[in-house]
Image (tube, rainbow, N blue to C red; front, side, top):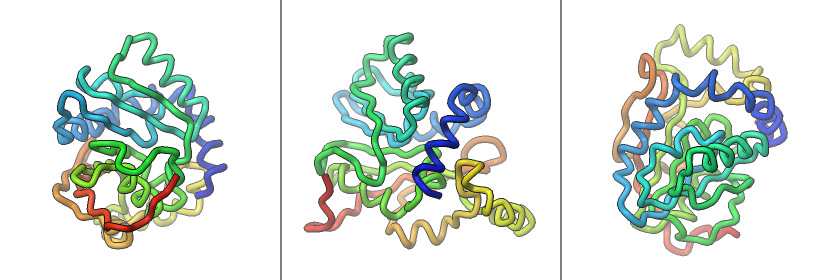
Amino acid sequence: MKIEAIDLAYRRYARGYDVYFGNILQPGRRAAIERMDCQPGDAILEVGVGTGLSLPLYPPQTRVYGIDICHEMLARAKARVAREQLGQAAGLYRMDAERMGFADDSFDKVVAMYVVSVAPDPVRLVDEMRRVCKPQGELFIVSHFLHPNPVVSVMEQLAAPFSRFLGFNPNLSLHDFTRQARVEVLERLPVNAFGYWTLLRARNNKQAGGHHGC
């Protein structure tokens, strides 16, 4: 998946995204935010905020920042903030999640919902999430991973060559992802219809003196 292909795919999805992926994926968004246990004053970063479907779910006392690579999706998120008067939405920015423009240790919690299977480099994405998250913070990931059922997984692997058109990679292994990205999982649970997606709550296990980005 290249960043240009992702942008193009979600420009196509933007107009109908809420209809296609709103209700069906909303339980996963709700579960992630419930597990975040947001406290008054928390600074939260949502990576891949899309059209802002999750923004009304955050408590009003929090400060939520969202980023997305797709201008069309982000424009709809900004319109939602204005329309619903979402005071918890502190800022929405067009930004590459693998090269964020935030300082180190900026956020109490960082969440990526339905983004890991879209990212060109999931390991780099998680590294950036760690970098901008405070040392004692937590990372939250909601994503589809390769299904454990062999019949379903074969179908997903066959669909992998079309990922640039689908807008996501259906062939991402949970085991490989957590090992390569060094995700220290604290909690894992299935979400959405048939538990087809997975929610991970992870420790921000950044290493002292590690990567420092923008």
